[in-house]
Image (cartoon, rainbow, N blue to C red; front, top):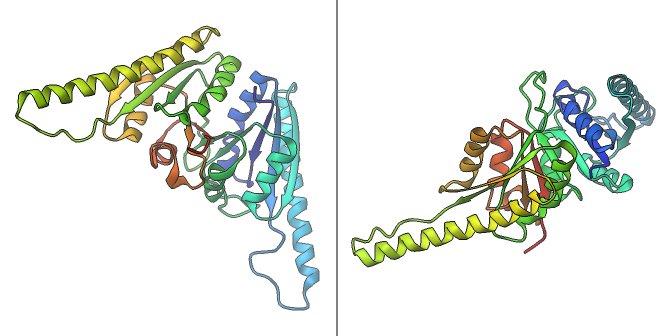
Length: 304
């Protein structure tokens, strides 16, 4: 279950557009929210020598602004959903590493955030923060890409699309999906995009037949694999379906499948090596995060 949900905020409406999703997840799972913002210990332009006083004054002013901002959000959230515990914290230091330390300190089991922001507390840091946390956060991260004015709200989670390959790494997302489905009552759609590779184009009938047989064998193996997972989820009362498609672009296939199913969330694993370029199935997760019109949950898998 997702008991402690951390929400990084930079003071912008874009960042705040992740709050309805985080609030709903906390309510459904009986969890609590941890609203967090990061203030740099120094201003963007350091004053000249002998001006330590203004630097200190700047920091205290920014810290005070952050505390007031988070306190206002806490009041608003508790008026909307009084049963949810809301905690606030202003921290200082490099944004990504400071958030990672905060995640570990409170033992957070989920981060919910937008992929970009333009806040008054820190200028345009959520984009790089999202990338950084994808690389190294010790818990899953749900990323939401809102519209430019931040007025769009993420959908209520009623269905979850889960792209998988046959690796043990990709299965790393399954405990998170199961917990989320049980908390929200969402259905789960397992999906695999199979790239058969280039056809040999042989005109020799036995070669062409062998190629087709191999393709069907691979497809059936994937169907059987996903079918076993679906059966496991169904034993716990979770509605589950299976689909395998042949597509040379897994990222495009995933986004198309989300459109077909109307899934409210895409959940997938990374390889766990750090760096968006090393995500599951190459840069598939990166492309999905950047192209999806619904939130994407990303969890680090085990190293191969």
